[in-house]
Length: 581
Image: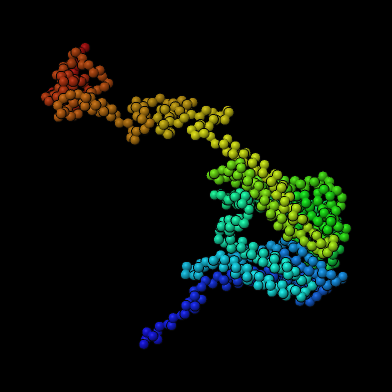
């Protein structure tokens, strides 16, 4: 009974699965909703701030909220339709400020990255699967986008439902996918699967064992070339603004009188600076841009529409007429960008352990040109659009010409640059590597290098002669030190007199035949300072002991004054006197 009452009732299988399921989908949905809310809230705060500070607002807070929602949709590339004009016609507004596009793209990227984060607790939920995180962020973001579209449909700036169904999901999928992909370490499998839709020759050109390295190199080189093109385009815009400074200032003051309106115009101009950079890049590439239907502007001619709205960026357009050498100088920009791309390819060709051959380097350079063409095509399509009807129906660079022109410039200058820089790097590497075992030659005028001693810097006479050939050597005072120095080892203790005598005596005794019981103490020491031949007047028996054990006369010595060295006989204690006159 106690077991039945204390035991907790078991859950059903469905409840168990619901309890144990990973909370990835709900968290991903929440991340998508938060990302959309942050972007929409940022623009709402900005628009409401301008509406509050405006002395003569055109509408109430509802109108300001409608404008904020419309701007948020425009930031995704959705084309807007303006109603309530004087003529009653609907005017399309399709130029997307690229700086506004950066806001939702960054928020979606962060949402996708955070959606895949695993719990720091070891007992926490497992990592969220890729598809779950991606789908959750996209669905949550599109839910807020759909609500904003429905709310904005009743205002003066209404979104085009065709653009909403295309561009809003495309931006959400791309941004969230990039975040999830980066969170998993940029695996190559999605790209390799995407390459399967390409034609056979193109797929074989980008496949292989080092496909990831080649694709990565082409992507980095194309991104560098695109950055140089857009950055150089921004410099061209700034130079043209300075050149047409008076006209730009007049148009800025003509648009509005109050500081609130001028601040709004300034913000709009700043948001359109990336668009102007892409326009200038297309101008340098050759196709240029269009300011109204049938009014192209390129380095060889400029024909803007006569009735353009006053705007500071439009005032920087080159004057009407044929191009001059100053306009043609803009062609240096795509050449420099292509050389930068070629330099990136050449650096990657010689950086790895397996260096690329000439054909592979050329193939990567051509692949870089293709990627650069795709990037410029996308940027040109986003940077332009209609600003009205009739003459204002076409505004911006023609994307179908800008992309191929960028690819042609990159292939024309990037391919030879990659090959030349690769050959130069290989030649420099071979010239800077000495053969194995070769001794480098000293420079002219340098003193001749002397080889070191075998002992590696010893103190023997050979080492002293080789190390200090010009310094005079001091004479060796002690002969024993000279003998020891032949072994290149200094004596550990100072010289002791008689050490050599003992050594000679031991060696002589070892070489002299005799009984095994003879010892060194029984043999009288020999004085090397005197002649070894005994003199005629000396007694050959003197100094020979009873058990000398040595040949006759071997122990004969002159008087040394040492009783021990005189002999071992009965009269050994009395030294003999030399009676020879």
